[in-house]
Image (cartoon, rainbow, N blue to C red; front, side):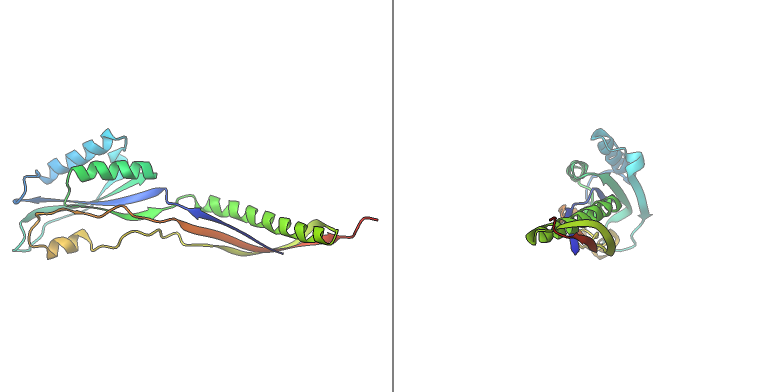
Length: 204
């Protein structure tokens, strides 16, 4: 008898990419000042910047047609959709040169898979019991289980975009910031197995 279980899963850990640019065309402050504002803002909404914020790269552009002096890229990892929305809104108000969601992850898939395995064997037992009852019989002990394995896509959808470095190298001016909307979708995890149960004879 086959057994099946599935569940829609949503991510619980998110990575935001933040790029700040020191430039002449807008009075946004030095890189140090912008970084200070980011750290202060995150701490004010309950996100510990010392743990969640990471400097990824620090470089200068050599493009003659651009006005950038220096560029810094950061990664911010937040737990839960509530923190994601708070962080995104607060950081967008600071008007960094670039802000986007780059990764969405479900961190407890191992636990979910174990739960699906239990649900799948219970599903097989219930199906076997229902069919046995249709011929006035009952099932006994389970004598065989074969698992086909769990399946599911864990790479939640995140909008694809060129890297901040690529956009800066191609840019002529920095008059507009780049803010990518927060978008991601749920994914289905599933588990299949096959089980054999004893079929008990009719009671006299």
